[in-house]
Image 1 (cartoon, rainbow, N blue to C red):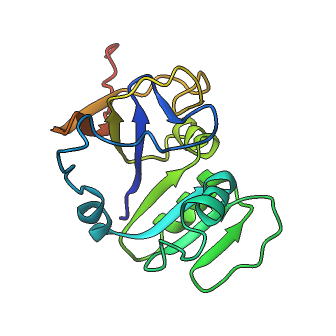
Image 2 (image 1 turned 180 degrees about the vertical axis):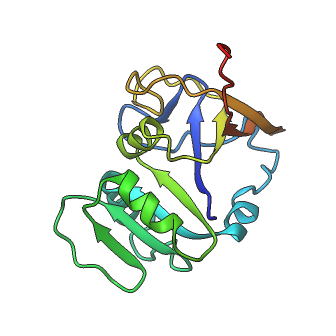
Length: 183
């Protein structure tokens, strides 16, 4: 069965964008050292990308206004904004967890949760995320949009791997089963 994977970067203090909604702080600690490209390896096992409206809007208005960067994937934008879908971008008003259940039943590669925070938090709360690929950037922002908020119950995780990359910690976790200690 396909996995639902959160692949995202956050500051050391847990923010995915700064207080201005910017991500220009996403870099390693030394600009003279080339940072290893983990994205290209990750997307080899992905054919579907999911995001919320704010992430989609930032991509098309700011980050890549001329070219849709996920053209080789089937993209889903979870939104209540009325937009017309294309061959590669579907605008849906499903609850994120319902969309994940539907997509996991279809044939294909893994499903990438690209952003934003509200959708990620909803998927965490409903335990729909199979793996957490989180790159921790060596920057303290102090404010912005938090990846993890006080909106879900405890999720015990198991560390699968951790690598340092120019000061960036690239981590992979999966939810672990908690055995019943009462018998």
